[in-house]
Image (tube, rainbow, N blue to C red; front, side, top):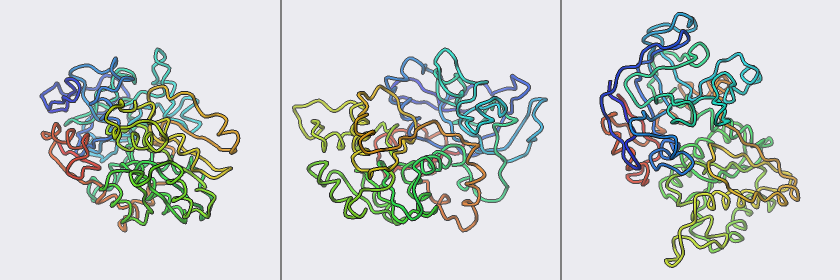
Length: 398
């Protein structure tokens, strides 16, 4: 089969690799009809320092997929060959204590105790189980009894593909943000996750969604969906940015903040947030570019400064590195609730399904900016990493 393989920093290749086979009685083989490119894939592409020891040449990338069941192991009775399914990115057994508690992202049956991680993940390199990824013609899915989400035939792949990661991740981010009825929410970072979080928040009854980013295409997309957008590049200080956003939140600050910049490889927003807090950024030619950790800590500090007293900050996505020190005094002084955690796909899947009707309230049918053949994966990674050609969400078809 053909698959996207990692060959080195910023170097991916589409090459022929052996077809996957059933290895365990609970496996299934899925023929992939669409797969997506996400911010986490960029962390592997860039060989982020927290993942560098775990990715090796030949690793198959990708973790978002929809397709058709080709074959099942003898213990898999929940799906059968020919069924159309979405593949959640985490691998969970469905019956351990964590899965039963609604936390399949922390499955104890598939986690790697050597790295003290949550559940094993598809296409996330050696740190998360070394399971080959979904940017391929075929995919082996372990724990398929619980790990596949059946979806109806008919609508295009775009309708359901995002159930694999993006939709439940954005849904969990909004739920964890604890937005009160008719409340306000600010979303820092308007990549695919932040963009979708804004849409979900408004659909679930938020009176006002505020988006912060520096990429013009992202700001324009969010504005079209009714989001009030702010570019930190237009402000000289954090205080100026906070004051501008405060005019839209009754002077209190938003009730909730979703921090959706944790896996940015093209970290223009992170760098700008570091700048508005007084850390030298790329505009200062004599100063080094802020590290990713410094940028994320700047984003967290902005979130804590922005949220109203007694509000909630939701950390969406995966955070690598060691952003330290955590501003604990601010958390306590403002009585802020802070929530984070890997997405629990199955916990939210049924709640999301009602938003995937033909009227498409979340705009999933046209959410992708690019549809490309799998053979063009090197080009897809390049434009996504650079934010070129208006690339916000790229789907690839084997």
